[in-house]
Image 1 (cartoon, rainbow, N blue to C red):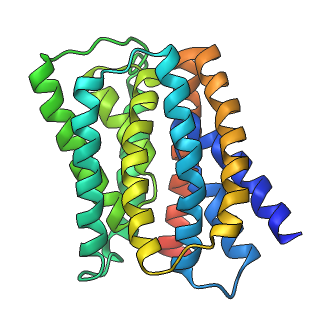
Image 2 (spheres, rainbow, N blue to C red):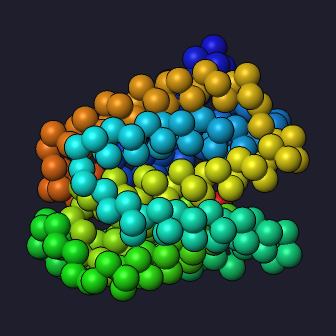
Image 3 (cartoon, rainbow, N blue to C red):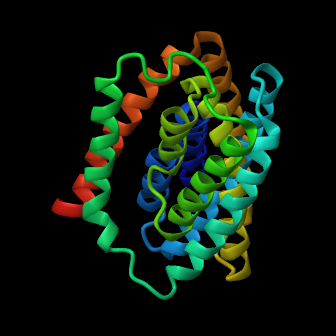
Length: 252
């Protein structure tokens, strides 16, 4: 029964994550509720070991239908990987609790800005030369990669918003691009957790299969319905993140 619960949660997480990120909102609480006596690091590691497969599959599916800007995104993915390693290292030196009360405020600002700009992310119109776009994308990758390694909630949503706001991508292209950077940050996290023995591989394997199925469903929905659909899901997921992070910061 425990395996069935987390497998179904992983499928739903893969579906949501493949569209706009935020799958951790579903899978991490399910793992903590199902295995209340497990070490948190083990549950986080097992979550990453499953979600990286769904994210990788989503990246592959998007790349077949969306023209990803590989010369820009590959260096940005490298920057995200390095940033995530540094973030994971810094969390061993600095307590990340100071971000708990700040995060809901940042997410609320993202949500309000997105709602205020009705046309934000509807049109895909990269606005920079390739060199400048690559530099900005690497900056985004490094900063949000560091954040993912250091703290984590909302990483996919931050990638998408910053690609839309600063690079001129629409929500569909931003979501597709964010998946590649998410793969890089997940690999960093898995390397760290695996080196410390904090992954249940036998459970992670079943969850990974379900996560891939969910990812395939979510990717097809995003590709079928386009940027407007992705924007709507983005608003919903960011709203849910605000509620969840506010509860964790102020009420828990």
